[in-house]
Image (cartoon, rainbow, N blue to C red; front, side, top):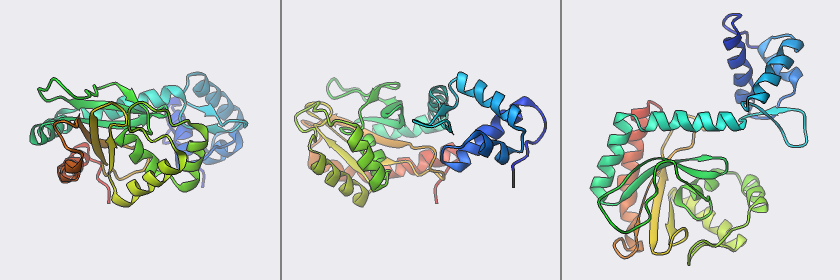
Length: 258
């Protein structure tokens, strides 16, 4: 049954169109959007054109069908997540985690094909890789990036590997495709990820997924520190505190997974 906007205001029609594509989770034609929202074709054509022009929708590659998100919507989504995370309670949880494990801690998401750190707490150290809020990083050599890749199905992971070169950024960056695919399978099995001097020399880290009730938002909490101070073999000891903080952050945001 077509979804009828709550009233006839333009803002309701805009959200109806965006919502139809979100729920479909695939590219939709103008006719399919019109049928989903119960609006006439000329109206849908005009609205889609305006949304596409403003970067809120985009065309699927090699098709006239519409997909989410457009570049501006990616930016807005990241800002919304950041606003939710850096609110008093989630940020306070991150501060308590950093104080507990005495290492740099961060919350990250995925934006424009990279890890985007949307909140970070630094401990008073002079060494280690400091992943500041707003900084981005590659997927293949970071704990959060690996967790995202592990969340993909096999076909999607293969497509990602086909489209990306595993660039070496540090002594232990995994650059062999088969070795990396095997590594991601291990991440899936264990439910957490690590980086062992793969993004920065002498820097290790680990991360877990923040359990949200929907799959649309991907958030993780992680830590990083110098291998001279945090032996790689001790990283498993930090997963318990990270998971506890992840559950608390999800509850503070008001979005707990089942």
